[in-house]
Image 1 (cartoon, rainbow, N blue to C red):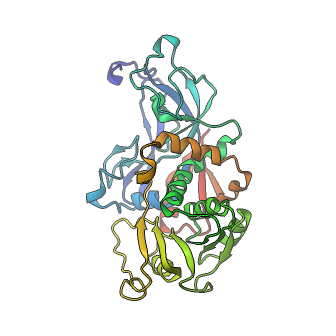
Image 2: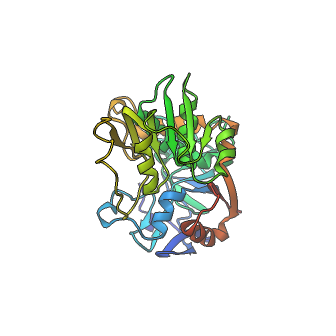
Image 3: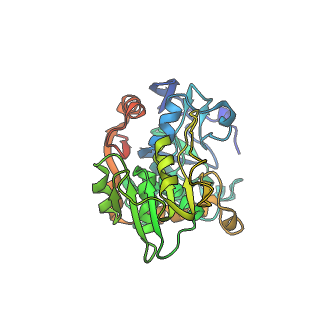
Length: 353
């Protein structure tokens, strides 16, 4: 593959969102190659803010021990800052590979676009930070299925996380399932579990505004403290708050599993493991999208999982999860607000001119 430094620069610099210092963001104009053999030129149309993780990154709360683990695929810079971070970009191919370049040195993975299958104008998803135009190798790009509106595909990374968590939980027909924390990931987990025959799924959240979104997804809703304790077959915790983790343990029935999806960054989380945890023989299991469940690793890879996540976004009711939208120029202000207090925001979608 050609050295990017030896390729003529694009006369139009790309515009990129960077965290300049913890709590401060900015739009930078940065030069990119005018042509990059073996890569696809993508023009972003939308990107999504993954509120939980991106807020922690924006505030500079990635623990030093996890700096390598938490790197995004196309991240530039280092934690805590300056750093370019994000992983939910939807765009159109502007320049595809010429036929003679079909033998790309990075072959496409199952579920991603093959090196010579994309043409200008195709809609694609890429785990790329917030940036208006960029080059990406074909193996990192996934075509958006024809039945999925491209603007909805900003939910793909969140759907991947929810799909992985549902596998980790082992939900089955007829289970009584509770999801504590009705953010985007929590509601997607609840939606996936509600599609299993016979399940009764309830989302729990302090914010009463979440009830409308839960009902739109066919999921019951409850406020904290209103469900019977020690009765659920399976509990997912996705609130990001230590108090939510405590409630998840309280709701789990005997021999039940609690799947922890929240990531707390540098915060410590006290748990009441001296109360009913041992007598009820509870299982506390972490779920993180960076690894596939062991039972699926022989047959699945990340590309196949992302392909399925995108296919699942064909459901029109999932638009209820996209509650806010702003132009790219406003992203520094939007990110600062979300990092302080997201309010009623679920997925905040960014638009590009």
